[in-house]
Image (tube, rainbow, N blue to C red; front, top):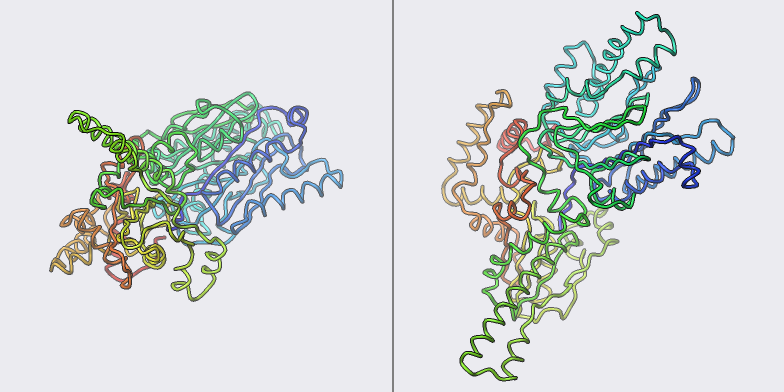
Length: 624
């Protein structure tokens, strides 16, 4: 129900054959570009604020352009960027130019969601470092957020550089660009001694360049979740995944192409390949393609405990992935016992539905489990009746008539949502963002259970959803979250960075005040403030103590109270997934710091420490 701006999307393609090969086989000069467009459209869910495209042409002569970039902002950024690219291509073809823009062997695509509140074309990936030496040019993009920007900034300044902006992508471009220059100078030593100069020297350096060596030196100091991608001006291409595997990356290799993307089914669909042909890039590993097209996957940073982002599976990634589909169904199945308690086990007088569409797969899982449980109950009842010799056709018919009632109770009005975003009277208009299906619920008798994928801020529930559902006059409204209570800020790419954004935090704070336990708030602030200037490795997440006096059920009850509009006629209950069942449903993706407060890197503890201090002191600015 609530839009959480989250990780960006990346896509890379390396053509391994001469460009003429693709024209002859596929009948187009833009095979790589067309495939990149499809990859980006299939990942549109990952970034709807901006999009960028980069391309490097390996076979280019001096005097010819070999590196291209196009970027656009807005929800239609992909179409805008490619429309501009197509226009440039048609113009070059009409003029008979020897080099057509964006016809090359190396492609990079990026979809952006801002997680720091910064916007504008200056922040749209890919970033480009220009130089008149081909090997010193660098295109950079990524799905990442670094938590130790201050340390990287300090290191760069101490090297004598003058960074233009204080942002992680800018700083990485400066850091890696300087390292690239140093590496080129080092590689030039032997060829110079051999007497090579000019283009022969440049070619020798280009053949010897191995960017993974640069990454081995610098990446161990990066704290955060990331998939960082680069293309060097000579055609070297690479993508590096963080050592905890927080951010996702998948790749596919055959004799024609090398492909990297944020999601597995995207590659499967665009290149029509089997799931087993698409590999997950191991954590701490880098996939690289040299100018000769040779591919390697190497460990660059020592892998740490695997803590892949669980929100990827619950909400962010496309549900068309085979494993994600099953995991979301399992989330729904595991909620059934709590849901049954919330309706007093009264299935006959309960209607089940879901809002929004991203919760549909969890809804299917919940329905399947309810149906299985009901079937077992029917069988047990029939067996017991048969043993008593009281089984008649009418009684069999009565037992089999019990069914799970499911309805589509709400449909989103997309046009109205857009109008609301532009209007000053948002709160009143928000109550009409969904159209309800009248007659789907028996008034004053039925329970209405609606499953969502997450409840973070609760504003949409309070302002619209509960009011909308209450128009159907159910006896009880049960809102079910397929994820646990979101209690802590993220620092690895999700746009939830302030403590006051979380309804669970607000509920816990309210409970502390109501029960005369304000001293816990003071203690947490004092402990957090005392470690404010400590190295990030020494910082402890004391914010956990805010929640410790209360059970999950107590906090859920307070959240319910805070989110229920005062004029609501139905009784309202909220049911949250437990952390334990989330881990059962998604066993490999154990990165659940926003639920548990267990951050995989030291930078996470520093962020939550800073977020609580900012909240307590009334500084509600977003993190840097």
